Image 1 (cartoon, rainbow, N blue to C red):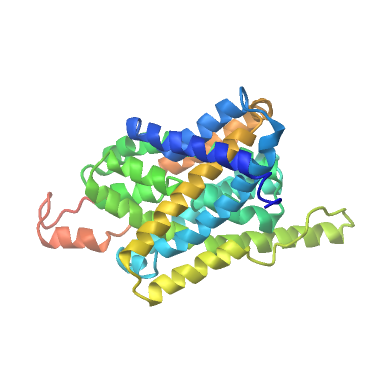
Image 2: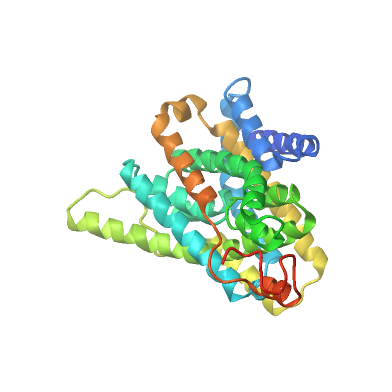
Length: 355
């Protein structure tokens, strides 16, 4: 009880903000609870709620609840999901993630950001926002300040893309729900933002966007492992140059919650679990994430964030622009082949895919 008591004030305040944010999300569905939570947290944390008594609880909420959110995500997806979109869809996700990661790393290096910043930006934008950042941070020895700033920026970028992509995807692909879903689900960072964005189009686009998003989430284990190995190589190079190394250098091992995510994902793939388990896990995961984002907002030093300057905002904006300009090119996916055989909108010799 003595260990729990200091955590309660910050945890309760974070949860109250999460509840308020979920309520506001019903009124402003285009923003979503996650975005509202981090904005409300930033406003309150930099104005009327600055009490030191909240620090332990907000730190716990930021760290532990995001970890629990990652683990619970494993119960909401399965490997059978990939079969619903076929290998072409899977290839699209791999190419999209590779382009995002490489772009984020190269731009980060060009702007002289340290490794912790550009790897967190790469993983957060390529995989699944806050959950990916929380999973990557310990294996690259990223500090809490870097993690908080990147999570905030990635969520703000996601909000802009969430509002813009329904228009952009419709302009690019017309009424092709599969390709609109591929662009939205393959681009936007968080699950909530993907669903909110696709909902502005139609229900079928929501289904396709969710499938593409789930495939990105399933790649989190591989991304964490690769980034951990990259960090280990950096450490080895610095050691060879007799540099002084800080951090625990734990890049070679996966965090417990990433392992938990993989175990639950495998379990959900091998055993047909009752649907209520997946629904409950999804609900709990969402609440954990939104409460954690509220805590991150409370802990974020807005003055320091602004003082980080134009360079940081240019970094985030440039990644967002690169993701918006991307197009789904090449071969048609199976659903479009079916449309072509059935003599879809353009007749049997035409397909809405940009081939």
